[in-house]
Amino acid sequence: MPIAVDIDVMLARRKMSVGELSDRVGITPANLAVLKNGRAKAVRFATLAALCEALRCQPGDLLRWEAEDMSRT
Image 1 (spheres, rainbow, N blue to C red):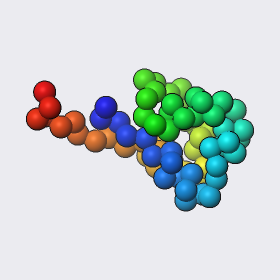
Image 2: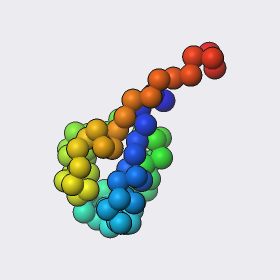
Image 3: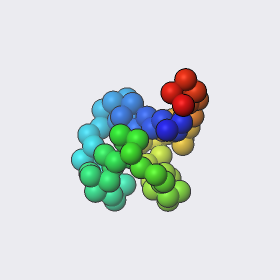
Image 4: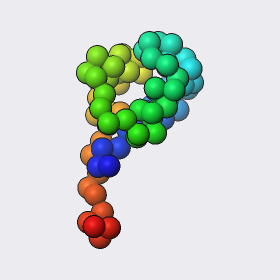
């Protein structure tokens, strides 16, 4: 998928655990893991805003676009 999720990077920078972040954001650790591991098909703006508030960051700190490898097609 061309959208990469860097929640783990921000967690490390903030020295915060997945459990602590899930408590602050109000989502389950399992759903946070789905987001963190890039398996989510979508993310609500409200969830993204809550993540940014809890991690004190911008959406671009959590999400980035990567070009797909065209040689695999």
